[in-house]
Length: 283
Image (cartoon, rainbow, N blue to C red):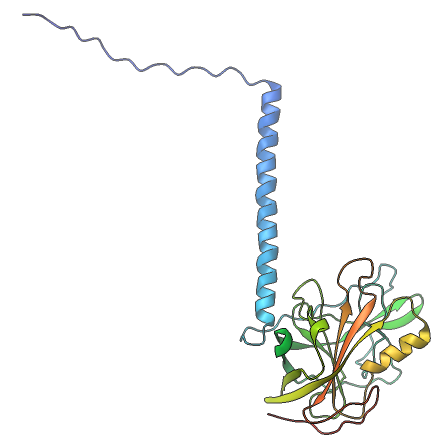
């Protein structure tokens, strides 16, 4: 009988890693730092994208989500803090600014404006269905003079406080971004005469028909031309809807022009820069 001797099993000893050199430690540290920075940037960009998408969704007219709040226009670096000024009546803003903002002179009479009732704007021809939020202004000091800088609605359409509500027989001034944020008026350039516009206000729907689209040059023009341009958004004595946005949104001519769309209640007409239309239509 053959006897088999079993050898005891032993685990192999792990190899001892050679001591890390200073260069290897440096590479390890840099690699981990880069991965950490990448993760932080990814989370930041993802958060911005999510916030933007939510803002666009909240600004849609067919959702029940509260609309995005308007954001104050940035103040110039050389602007000085201005003392508190009570609410002012509507003053048609000058269209010409260096960065597309709307700036107006400060009115002398201090009274409260009529609150906005407009909640939604629909322009089927260019696929716009947006909530409308009231936008006001802030008083700032620029070049030794007080001016009113209008707020900007980021994703929704802004209704200028103090301009008319539907049914009041005056100019209803609505502005929106052509680029950035929700780009709510990015296709305003494609609106044509005869297109329909519907405003929702006070539980009613008001139907308007586009009468004209104008592109005006704003940057670098004379004071007389600026005054003529401002007439399009000045108060009127008949029902008018005026939509305003900057143009174009890129290139060397960025924001040097304004697209202005004017509409009147269904069944009426509008003479250029006049108040020949009357009445309004509710549906």
